[in-house]
Image (cartoon, rainbow over all chains, first blue to last red; front, side, top):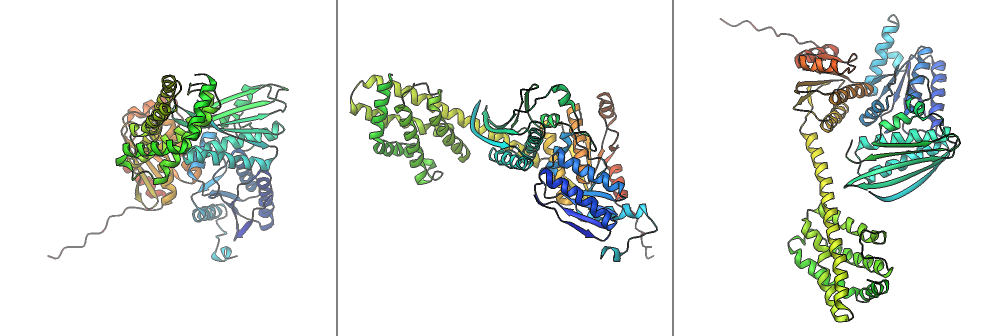
Length: 133
Length: 137
Length: 288
């Protein structure tokens, strides 16, 4: 079983899933993310799935559950880099990934998280210092 | 219709679900499936393999390379000797909701395949066969 | 033919294999004189040897002259492989069938030299080679059909270009009647273009589509859903009143999707979303 590394980028957490996860790895990631959100008071989570060429219902639910748990912990989740064939397959599967925002890539995803954070707490404008953390 | 090649994979744990994905991907690539077709059948296989592990107590996957009317196809047969499914219609109807609901993945696997067959009864285990033909995207 | 006679025949072929292959390859090369550059020198020799080996093995195991039966499957598989590769290389069906038919002459000459019931032997052998030759043609046809289908697919992909209207805005002008296959190809190209260009907005314009049926409408909606999962938004433009009616009558759920009457309207929305505006440049006063 592999443990997927979680990076801290300012107020956000970044996860890049590079391996074909088995169920246990996925669940461990979910646990790790929620504890890291709490530990770092993270405002958002960016999950990069550009390396995944299969996302089945289990992984899909893991992503949706992670987003839901993060929301309860006051953090927003953005999934980035979904491959076209994966997207087509998920639509066919009937999985909508409700509650999960998406962006094309990490850069856009970060912009999205920042704008969501800005809206949520307008008086707490993130500064460059935050991101350099 | 001809069956040109057969391969079997034992599936008893969640790490073997990953092996199933790799084996199905390999076969799909060999048969010349497009990327989208590959993803669909690998995803369907992942769903069914997981079902087998979670509800069937593990089982066996048989991969068959088919040929019919000049078209090549891939058939996957998932067999277990688990408790079997009491109400197949209900099982097929279980949809996916992102938050809860386990959903058996049967409906999804069917939507991702060209052909779908299921045989199951309480105490008799379960057999699901899906087929995907080349060139049907 | 009785089993023993068939087995004896097999033994005879095996004993004279080298000579047979030599003559057979020479005949093939004569017939294929124009295509010699397509086949590597040793390839023809190897294919012929393998075929003869498979043929002999089948004959020696007894069995029937029915080439569709199980005992002939190894021979059929070999022929199918040869046939498919010839189809890919651009040979004609006749040239491919020649692979089998040109074995007849050397085989008959061998039978004549060996004595025995020549007529009966030649008849059985002819039957077998004829049906194998036909099988080769059949497989060839099927391979060609697969190749054509794939080429059609590629043509479809080429004929529906995705246009980048502005940085981050793609447009897909659909023209003509959409069938299920074409729509799927087109949609896949759009999604790939979204990734390739990093566009977050895609406008699907169906002004040029006369008829939209349920299947096409569903494909469109699936594409919009897939794009959204990837992080891009789609706007459907060019919806004419008739199409709007069809969509409503078909009960297709289109609530979530932004639709605009014209591509221009859609483009305006896209620009606004990206935080851009179109402004008029001030015309410098003319010197009088």
